Length: 130
Image (tube, rainbow, N blue to C red; front, top):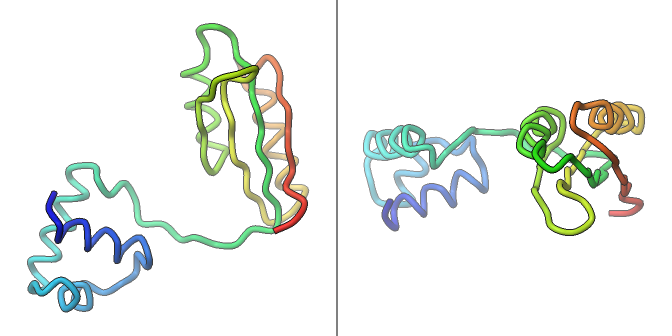
């Protein structure tokens, strides 16, 4: 990966729908060269996905305590529910960021995490203001 790849990534992070022609103009390459570079970044796992970012009404952090050997499996399962998942140190083993458009959806996701095999205890923090 070189400086041009980094600039392409910067453009795509700002707006993943940016046309290849516009990216090419910004980095002084042809559209075909940009297309090949992006294809290679995907192949190498640098670009994992092109996503849509939206605003959400409700956010929470679920702190999760797991058994001594179950953290990896719990992280995998929580990552199917949560927006972001982190292994952390301290009283809890995992911190999961949950985003939802309704409080009902937020509560549903929190309940799903609590029901996962390997989850011993949780503590949920709900964001009150922006």
